[in-house]
Image (cartoon, rainbow over all chains, first blue to last red):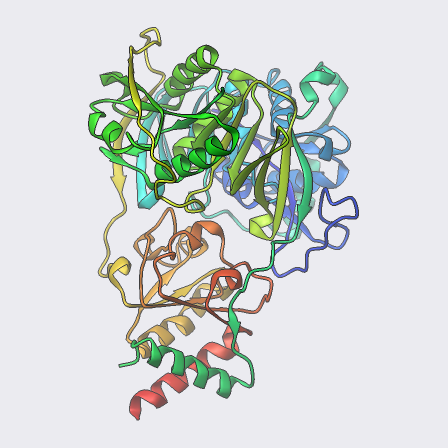
Length: 260
Length: 326
């Protein structure tokens, strides 16, 4: 079974003071650490687990610059066989649809039974690329997948619905699945592992090689402005030394009638 | 006069809350723009669902067919794209739910309409439509505009608009026949799988002490558990804790877990992703403990403690035990 996994490198913004770029179209990223998008980490792991069980190959693919190869090397170290980077220059000129067209064009020459994307990427939080690709490539699809069971030529998938319910479906392959966090426990990757994986194939394809027209790449959805969340009244912060905070905490619980 | 389409979401014979929320927003936009509201209802034996939204739309277009008994994004896309071609609505609202997230992007490709996902607001100023969204786990907001198009598709975040009726409408019901040529389904519904129940039901708890990603390691969960035990409360958690298999799914609070309504909800090391916050809208009082003062949870919590949980949580536990001893 051949699986292609679309991955993305995203900045870590937890516990960081985010600064808005002067043009107000993006955040400043120079000072931020970057990682493999959390959902994509699970997607790569799931592909490798299926390969270990059923044989085949795993190819990781990303659209980005040289720095973004970091997430491909990580994917290779986890167990992917090949990696592809589509060199597309400045990504901020694209929307989800342009990225979907780029990835779909690159996939045309690849053999695959399954294509995985993460449910969403933490940076733009759009969650549209996977299903757009399924439509562009005319693939069957399941979204927010939390379990996969391959039976003959079909994939049994469990999609996460709201309220703790799962929806079990049976779909023909080839298919595209968007992978939800928690589907597995992604393996640990060591620095040494990443170094060893440097021998594996990492192919770079130029955007111009994909034969996409300017019109196909032009975004339909345009970010006008990004900004910090509007001020709210917010929480009343308990301050002072731990003893004072603890007294205030107990006082609130007593007032609310839950200290028996 | 243009139309606003609302794709009605329902499951197992019940209307989902997101449907009412979208109808509220559609009603608001319709009043402002002098548009009409059209509910599009796909399903089987959906009379009572149509009845329930009868006074919130000007038109209900109903596709009632046994083949629509279970949601199938591909069939929904085929039906909707055909209907959109005929009716030419300018605005199409779909829930940012599991089903909506599978339907909207394919519908956008099929129709060629721009798409904005997970919107928290939509406004129209001088003919220009702007969608408000969040990025970077809610730490950043963005305003999004669109290339000129005959129509625009939006998926709407759950829980941001009221479920009330915004204005009185009277729907004309239009029954349509199943328009998709019968073909072999490439995806078939098998069953719904419920989360295994546990020894506690967090949705019934009066006091929840909830643990999130900030706890760092599995063994540290005991620090939070001890606080919940000292308080005779119930331990619950956010999604990352279940993803890592540190606690069972039935303890998960949020859209994909359970909605809770305790008197007091103590959130420890939980940043406050909207999926989590949507599960605690019923809590009377929220106390958040997080070392990141910018964590989104402090925007909605009533009380906050900005501190290292490893220092403050044991101190809280000691004080609780001391107080209880009298």
